[in-house]
Amino acid sequence: MLDWQAVDTVLLDMDGTLLDLHFDAHFWLEFMPLRYAQRHGLDPATSRDPLIERIMSERGSLNWYCLDYWSRELDLPIAELKREVADRIGYRPGVEDFLAALRRSGRRTLIVTNAHRDSLSLKVERTGVDQLVDAVICSHDFGLPKEDVAFWSKLQQVEPFDPGRTLLVEDSEPVLESARRFGIRHLLYVAQPDSQQPARESDTFETVHDFAEVMPPQ
Image 1 (cartoon, rainbow, N blue to C red):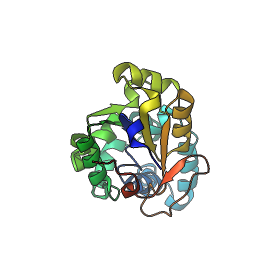
Image 2: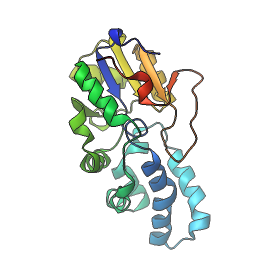
Image 3: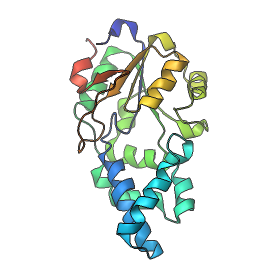
């Protein structure tokens, strides 16, 4: 599936790739809508769908990922609420072994995430995932989401990499497409970002179900 001899740099998404997306899905689809209804005196059953639709309308933009934006829009302390269900934060299967193998292989390994800094801090606090890679890059620092092709140029300015010898592992097809348009050669799609949802294949990108399938040679 992957020619490791042609890869010097590994870019890794965080949520849904390294960490189980179940935490985020539960928070945004279940827990936060309940707190929103309670705060605003609404019926949870009837207020949930319009709220989810409102959130989904920002998908692919930086606002979609921005806790400050949603705190203002919804009049809720989003970062504080996330801490209430932080026990759901955890690694996807095989991730720690994969990251250890990457480190032993000597390749430069970066987390490249759209997560807001407050969300990133909480997940680092719970998992220590930042200690298993060489650096963590947050798209909010560039003012662009990874879905924007210009993001990769900004990333290259602070972390020089050869797109032709770089691997990106992601659970988002729009992000993979953005990276492909920029010229990143090696692209892998994560089949089961949320442990509570069925795996899904990509029709466009190579799909990985288990990191054991793509361990770098030692």
